[in-house]
Length: 458
Image (spheres, helix red, strand yellow):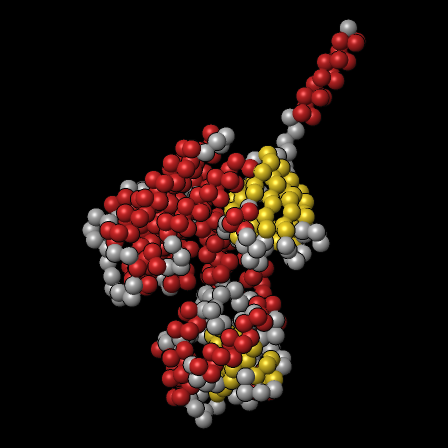
């Protein structure tokens, strides 16, 4: 009996060992003709970033303990989506100079990633390059999106060895992507076709209006299309709050999103808004309080609290973070201390930033209006070093005025980090003593800017 009991104990132990959940995946492979020393894996919402080291011969191997899901592989030149589950052992091999024709995804769990790769190629084939697709008239656009939906559906049907649960979620995702594409058409067509005030016809959005459940957690975490639809729904709700209850724009979305019935979805909605929104809000205390009262995600809470504490150091009246010896287009270098005795209106921008360039005409008008007064207009470019010549050429071609400076380390510059700048354009007003008047000053195109200047007797 003792022997039988011992055997049962051993078998039970072995069984428990075999059922232990694997909480990692293996990624290995080789990149030929490569001189890179690493590449990155980013989650689709950019909340997770993993760096994978590459050896001199182009080979790599890493153990991934990040969350399961879709990741973007980016080597500085090429990009592909990978679907990573715990227990996977993926092999990634390609020629860095011929990525599309040589990419080979193999190994355990590779079936989903291969399907996604084929899907992305079909998407590019039917969508085309850039934003031309959004210039199509609505009927042609809808026909194109329907063709894409049907093509991808057929691709999924023909795929081999895909897990049943993935197929079920992906079928819904294909429909969500189609609806999301329709949902964005009106505002994208207005912008890219340059049709101010454009509105789609009455029945264009009938498929969009059929989505009435915004609390499907599984779909929200799996499908970027569904996530976009949910986000759009609460953006519309926020707009209603602004119109009816006169809630400020920076608090309106949080006020709408906290009404989500699903806590996980609520956490993601308010976090996705707060990680950037808190750096722009004019109501820091109210914004932070509302976020804290409604989020239950500890990682999100820690990150937003860190941002909140940092932003309090750049509140009105606090000493401004400094830029030191930034290259001046006019020659030499310039530091913030060189400008003491005058107000300083700082524009943080880049040559690739459309909204930044849209403010240039208004900025020129404001500069001309306040020429000779006790204020300096300083534009700080956060362009990458590789775009240095592009920066100089744009200043010359567009005849940009004011003091034009080139940040020393782009987004990693102390001045940028000091203000917790995560998006541009960003405008800042500093007083003659080097103290902050506003870390989020109005844009040149806003009448509020002149009001702020008047309030400070500029």
